[in-house]
Image 1 (tube, helix red, strand yellow):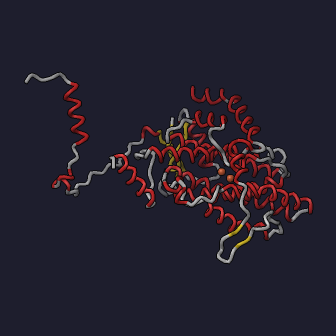
Image 2 (tube, chains in turn orange, red):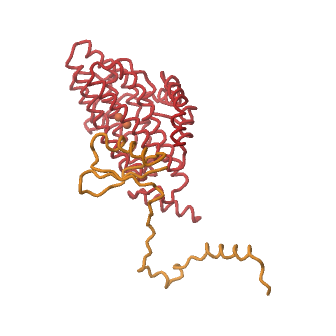
Image 3 (spheres, chains in turn orange, cyan):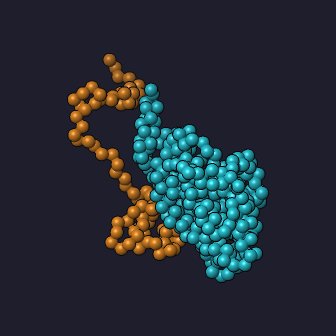
Length: 95
Length: 300
Ligand SMILES: [Fe+2]
Ligand SMILES: [Fe+2]
């Protein structure tokens, strides 16, 4: 299991991503994170988060993008290919 | 230009303008491959780099030195763990990296292929080898691959203690008996060649693929100049000499030196150094011997 490690340097500060560790469970992750990120007293606290529990948001829709008014605002190539493949793999329709 | 080539070009421009990427971003195949190779060699060097020092833990002259050296060795193994983790996220499993290290397919830095003859070597390694290494590692704080750059912060912070520990060992000996001073001088003589080879041949940075992708943020010669500028005066001020009669700082601030032995560098990093095989054998033995620990952890 991979745990992402977030480290708080001083009380009151934000936790910042510091790296990751691999451990079979939370107990081992706890032991190794202490050793790796705390043995010199360099951290006030750590957050150990299973990687799968991190829900990432990094695709931002741009509402002010005005490209829809232009030809280059539409890229249909990929979806057209997908639609054609889908059509050809399903049963033919009587015409 | 194909869609992929355009995307790669866009990526290249992005990293060249100082942009950083995450493991979840799209990465060009060539970038990923170069990055893994670079990071893997770094991790291997941290792992193999403790072996020359480990030999001296039991022979350290005082308890204080023994503890400090043990702490340094623990740090370096910790660095290896952190760096292997970053390489794993890029797609290369750790077992495969160990296998490639042991078979000689993957390399580790030249300086870790040499013997540690005396306590003088231990001081010179921690002081000057770590100094040379921290120059490369500081340049990685700006690496285009952000997860690598982030762990470098912690690593550089710990490295600064290593250098000070080494300098302290050297200072203790240089203020000691003539025999002790001689041990340091002999160690400097032994290590100077490998140190000058450490940063690699002076290939122009624009021709260095690792610079092109902004994995490194400086060229080899820039790193070596920085090392000379920072440390030669520190060596000289202790009354030590450097075994290169051509060494000097030009009026333009650029250091001149005798051509490092590039043939030696090549032969050493390809596994023909004085301790290469012995140290790989040591790793092989321990990886086999401790396999049950890793297996039982995975089964836990
Ligand atoms: Fe290190
Ligand atoms: Fe170090």
